[in-house]
Length: 341
Image 1 (spheres, one colour):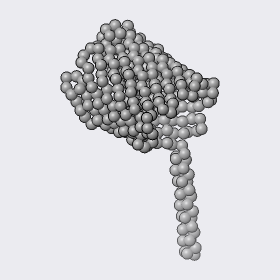
Image 2 (cartoon, rainbow, N blue to C red; image 1 turned 30 degrees about the vertical axis):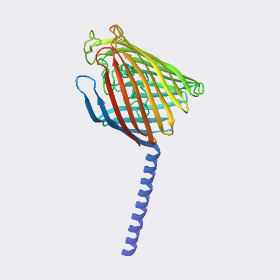
Image 3 (tube, rainbow, N blue to C red; image 1 turned 45 degrees about the horizontal axis):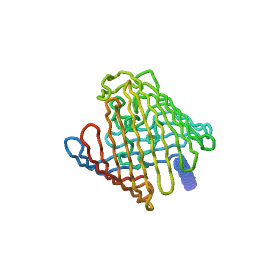
Image 4 (tube, helix red, strand yellow; image 1 turned 180 degrees about the vertical axis):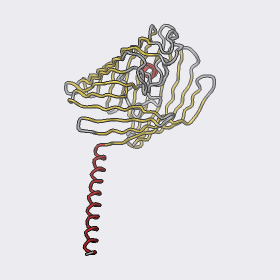
């Protein structure tokens, strides 16, 4: 009797373990199909003789982790976190695709203003990533103290999609206008929109705009009449084009903004020539005038190379000559290694 009882217990335990193992495999397979993880790091060296003293340093530009979860075939969630410097959440949103032409997104994400801002640093040719005008007008790096350092992101609701068999791509959003990880500091919302037309396979043309009121997070020497915490008119627009061929990529754009009574504008053109397999020669012209009344402008001339030694992984080297209308000119030499999984 004891032998029979022991055999039954062992048989039951074996069945339970097999069932648990099968259940665990199902869970693992489900997670594998529905959750994708990725990330990248950009590290390098910078020499800069701007200002009173020369600086040279090894630095960590970015360390980014990304996760995307597929809830259903039409419903997904996305999360992005930065580990460089002080850790912070960059993006967190969920979106639902109602139609191929209409997807709605809510949360924190890139503001769809300019051609460059929505682009990932993984694919932007320049080590400094974005042009002066984009950095300033999209609130990326804090060069506009009134706007602050928002990494080009904000909180809000976005609808987007492709129309007429992908002839047009549109984005339309209602955003706080305050930047990342912050509640809105006024009762006004920003309206952000963009439209790109693709008349040819290799050509895209279009524009974007931001219309709203900002709440100043700091004082600015460019716009000293606006105090911290004061609401002010903050409007921007842009128009540009991209060319993508087998031998060359070109991205060019004109941008303009108005903060209170101060107007600014800028223009950039970046060319990437694919001279050898996996090897590109980079050149860029980057002009920006922070205040058109006092002509506070700077032009950067960039030349460099990049080598894609593995998919999405590259080595870069670039030289930038900074020509300032006010102040002394300077030189910037940079090298960067990018690895991504």
